[in-house]
Length: 458
Image (cartoon, rainbow, N blue to C red; front, side, top):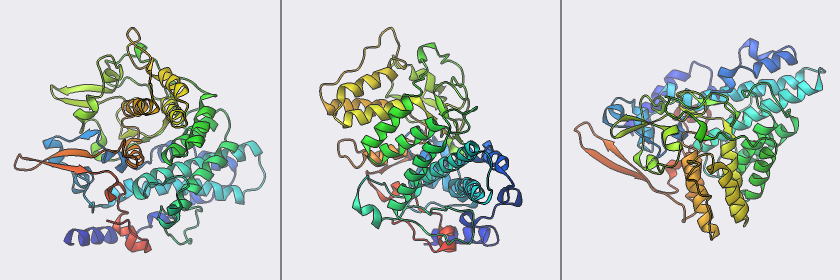
């Protein structure tokens, strides 16, 4: 109880005299763009639109190991998230990184959308591009927030209307009351925004920091897979792969360097990163033995993704952004191949699914010894594709969602565990069972006090 009161006090005293994150007023330059070129420039601000993603969904996964010194030097909040504390100790910086920055990007998108209503005329192709871009950005942040602060959504589940999602800010007008929408409304908004974006975005863009149709198809495939709409997810993945089948061949990659992957490499569809979450950076954390031991010596990802820190400590180096990051939050074709393969298998297209999977794997394993994967049953095929998904996508912002959705299926549910170092040198083992309420993070308590929103259950 004392800890709870401290959280409330700190968040209220910090924000009571400041702009509320959900009702933030944009500054004059942002809120009153004069023409379509201003709106387009607004959405070209890479530091605003390509960076702000929630760190929590990687900080709490089973990919990260903090050894004694690293753990004991972390802030109270970092320790809380790492140990799945039911009531994490949000300081102002944590509230900003986990929530405020994402709604700030949503604000930019809404300013652009409101501006299109106010500014008349102009080139229609540019208008379409701006609207599609803004809808894509808004949907991406809504989805990212929902993975942290809303429960798991299942396609066509009638109980979705009885659960709370996230606040859907659909305008830059700060006078609109802040409230949590239902889970159904949350996901229908995300999916609806992306479907509109597909119709509006161009086929090609000059740089991968701006979305195109390809990016919208890839993101919608991710969203629909997460909610178990396998028909829809497969359709979106196939639309994406009909336009771009690029895959890096790791046989030709220099896997010995500190960071083997270039920014905007051939697999990247849309570039973005999470650059917050203190202990996400590879200078601080190590990867778990469970993750590292998934890779055989013939698996080229073992040396492309991981580097030796000490004899028994391994760091991650496989970021698709050309360097160290909290995680690569963008979209890439390897994920789309995995989405398609999983959906094909789940839709009784086992042979097609294995063929799709092998198109990826032949570029991930030592080519001289690679044998295409086969499966005699749908369950065997599904197990194979999920194992490869685990190997392919660490530090991509997808693991937490995969744990949440797969925990609904007893065949693939997972209890994740950690050994926590204590100040006296002893270790304490803790675990997070499938479908635990802690798979949905608490909304920062200061926001609950400010807005009257309902808190997530504990």
